[in-house]
Length: 349
Image (cartoon, one colour):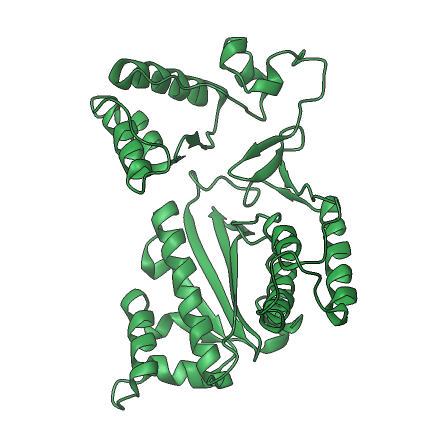
């Protein structure tokens, strides 16, 4: 076979394997860039100097062409000095025909997120076009907001809960039939609130210090739950000598099951969610397990995690085992509700 069918289940895995195989004889820096910083065909990386990023990208271009006849292009950067080092045809489509020195650089999109390269910040572009109040229209509106990092987790959680309520009450309705008017006002208020995201501007850098040159890194993960939802949020603490700075890393929320869960069980689920995002962070930032610190408002959960004697029911035992596979009981701490940032998401429920 010389081609792969677009849409075949194994095709993305084969494409990724082919991409990595193309640089197997390249330098370690190029191999790490391709294997660790590519998602399908998008490569994202941050470097400490212009020379470093130019050398890396040009070497990667050469190795991909030599090893797999793959062309690496559509380059965008928050540095005009970097952009000047590449031919116009290698730049992103909307950067090819502008004067980089004189004109404002256009907004870039990467993995569904809008990146203002002039401010070097993430921004949100909200689709304000009204959609019909049907199951299809409601689902389309909700899915138009893509936020994998969790910047808007409290807002999207409110939408998830309302969406579940609408869908459950309209399960027998056709996808294009009008929905019950009882939900229309609440849905419109939520959709109108999305417009406020246009004013949200989040710096791309985690904090003021370089993660690569830090003397020490710590990750602090906060967990919380309510009867409606569970939430977890992680922050990175970067030490530079005697000083430090803290920045948001990732947030995640889940809608709680409708029945059969007590608050202690939901708090335990929130702790497992905290472990989930901790594993993502460890994999991406290569931070040791010992440098993670976890916080929960539930003394019961802390009792579950620290217990070595009592046997639990299967539900609790499985989740405690999941937590202790990644962390030690001494890494878990109690935090008052009013000081817990994860409470912001569950409080809105």
